[in-house]
Image 1: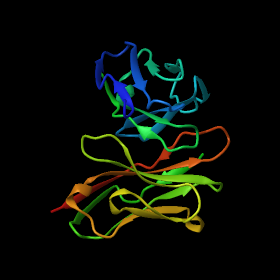
Image 2: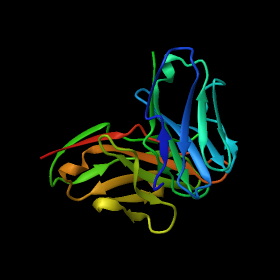
Image 3: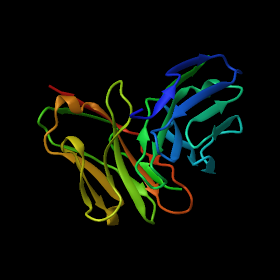
Image 4: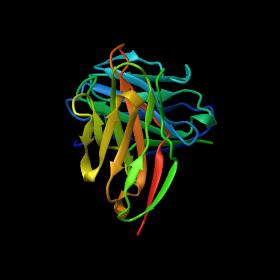
Length: 113
Length: 115
């Protein structure tokens, strides 16, 4: 596709459930990034991938958060045992390579009840 | 770790007014600087960026920003705003090297242009 796509666009879940968020980067982009946007914290970096490996996981807030990327394309962000403070918009971005401009997707709005 | 400060959280202007949004960062090394915009109901879009060279950079829709290294600043400007500029504006920085490539964002400035 022409841009970064994310699914689902909205997700409502109950506290304690696991959720999976998906990101499909721009074709040919080797770098992929996850961010979280919340009212209290603004935009926070979570993790990035170069190819299938994640050189920088420094932003993951706890061990309940994990991400993977397979085939150098689609990535999934998994949140286990969700908590209410996980409610936020999760943004994905991709770039042609590290150090290049990042292009953002529309985000997944997660609400944990 | 680096941080980004945007001084104005909410700005209200009338159409045709001039705009300047402040952005300061804290990092002493080489940086890449960005301004992103989020229009209502839309996703983040790149307005402009600075990597190196001329410190005055021009972006889309008549926006420009000036990198002043001595002041650790990257303020966004537009000489005459339009109603369609109503949006949230984010300044971001990326430090080069060290294996880190994520952007550090400011808290954002909510700009409202009154017709």
